Length: 321
View 1: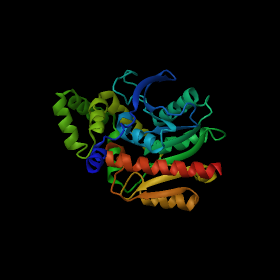
View 2: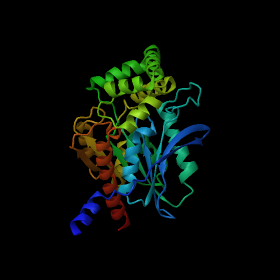
View 3: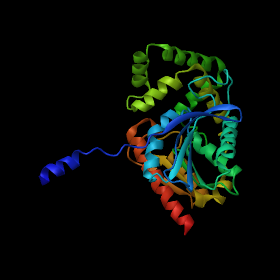
View 4: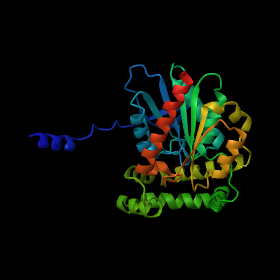
């Protein structure tokens, strides 16, 4: 009887993981896709805002958001905010939005949705989302952001990266951008199974089903791809400058970055620069073989969520002591 009970225990299902829900809200008159999980606590003290890279499609971050929520014990609310016009529907009728406009949009969201609460806010930014996150922290220096965490950060151009040069070349050309966007929308218009197999073959052979779904439904839209490339163009213009070392140095006790081993968007030479300019910034290197697009694989999402949750819990303990 004992052994059968043990077997039954082994076979008992895990409790279901909390699921993030998607909704569209208006932020400064712009339709904005959100992915969120509310804290189990009646009065949570913590809210984590996840700022995506480019593409700013929140569906890519579903596994990460859910795993981060679970790793924080359900005690913090977690919200991922999409970029304007990186959504499934063309709410803005073909308008193109720059990096600066996307930053202002995130600041407006914080002011609209989170500033009136008593919650401490943690900003987690991925890739160009790390740059956006730092700009958010600058704007709200007095109150809001308790911790800022940049994941595989894109903070300044890497002039040695051929891939960046190629993307920049396409993004600077209106004609090439339109051509790439037309091709994307054509692939997106094919029979669903054909579109899915193309995405899996050429974009995400290791992608999770969730990421493939998001790629098919959101990325392969003309308006989304145009905005992805236009935002990239404005990123490359702005990130030609040095990071704001004075600000990073002033806030270094609240800032952390996770770098990848072979990531041309955030090479280890940038980690060394941060270490030189702001030695108290918490710097980590992921050596598990995940990629810059960690959120598109289950393994990457779970590993980075575990890392982020541990860092947040440790930093909160230090801050409260």
